[in-house]
Image (cartoon, rainbow, N blue to C red; front, side, top):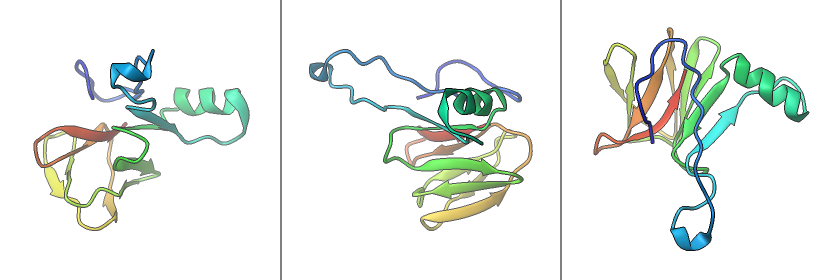
Length: 119
């Protein structure tokens, strides 16, 4: 899900290349989530510019959100929260909260694959 290097100050945005259902790639894989203050395209663009984004492996996949100084892992029981310094914390429960410093943070599955990330 994650290509290339990224670090502090990076705003995560995910996307896919969908042409035909026969290609075997469903729409919305990965999915970018944006916290917006208002309606319409300007609200979305402002949220992206402000770095209020998160990326999940799909619409129904685990999600990692930054809300002020906390990370909220949703639907992520059994994953690992990985901090920018490489430290890890087990995610227990369908909703788990963690203190957040400067990002980026990610959720890894049991095979080490990235299933969600946020700045």
